[in-house]
Amino acid sequence: MKRATGAMLGLAIGDALGKPTEFTPWDELTRSTPDWRELPLPEKALVTDDTQMTLALARALKAALAAGPLVPLRLERPLREEFVEWWRSPENNRAPGMTCMKSCWRLSRPGRPWQEASDIGSKGCGANMRVAPLGLVRELTDRQVAGAAQLQSGLTHGHPTALAASELTAFTVRRLAEGVAPAELPARLREHALANRTRYDAFWLGDLAARAQDHSAEEFIARGWDDCLAVLDRLDAALARPARDGDPCEITGEGWIAEEAFATALLCFLLFPDDPVAAVRRGACSSGDSDSIACLAGAFAGAHHGAAAWPADWVERIEHRDELLALGALWD
Image (cartoon, rainbow, N blue to C red):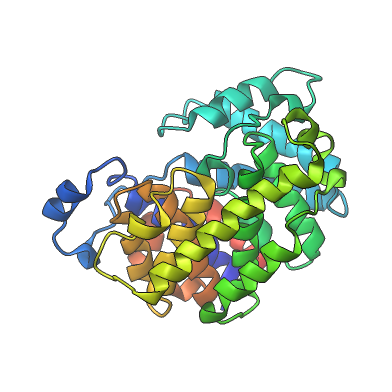
């Protein structure tokens, strides 16, 4: 099925679909696109910072795994380099998030611990819109996926909700790639959140929690998981009365923050589990952070359906096609 290839292509396709609709008010969007099911992929299918940073993470992950088993320092070094290179790149002109930009500037200062570069107060979706590759590497243990997902978030977004939502996003991709039925996901993810609610992994995060105002590391990370559990409640409510032609952001949120980007993207996928193109179009035709929502919906749909999910002409013209295919082939 080539699930890794499907996920890598899907996230870029969703990103490119949502790029033109981001920041468009709902009433204007419904006028310009009366039938969201016909939303076209732009002829020049350019991606945003979402795919750029996903590729940065993917390249760092590839380099880290080539050096040996995945451990924090082995991932942090190339990831830091990739993020700083992205920050400096002239191609970094796709409306990047301010948290990422400021944190990458701080990461560029030699010798500075990454925990000092992190924005401990930010839970923007820039933390988890890039995490999908970690769910695609089958040789990683669940603890490695969890720790690495939180670490890659922490380099820029250190808020506990950004950490927890990144982990949940990575595990959604992983479980779908393993063949878990879509309908089982909400309950499985809730179990995961409850089981890890007070587990602070200092091996991966170091002293990050000490930089916040919580009384303990356990209290710090629990704040993040509680936000994620609350948004899973909202996801359940949205699925209980599915509105396939309405704004997917109405109940689960507009996606500017990490847990809402995760939940609204998952909602778009779960509304159309057998129609990956409809899932990404639904994410792109939304009132919120449409490129990030559709990007994640594409990763989920691609991990479930594989490479065959996407129209051949879309694959042909998506930006970074060759690198996306190469990384997918590596992890398939």
